[in-house]
Image (cartoon, rainbow, N blue to C red):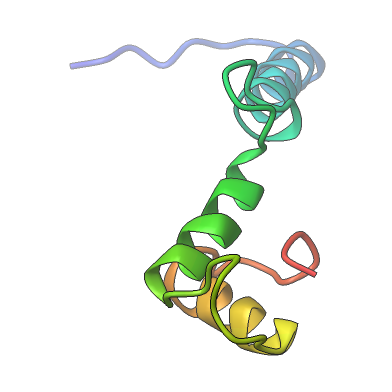
Length: 82
């Protein structure tokens, strides 16, 4: 069974926040070096591809793409998709 370790709350918060912040920066905020896209941009492009929306197809409103992306791939908030 795991032992409970007593630590000052300020130290724990500093370490935990720093770990979380670095995780967000590395996994979501910085574009990937391979293609220059952030994960949210990759989701938008994938939703467009699955909908058959390419450079040679008929125009579709962006609200359609936003709804498709939010509904299938990005359920937590819409600000990044808009």
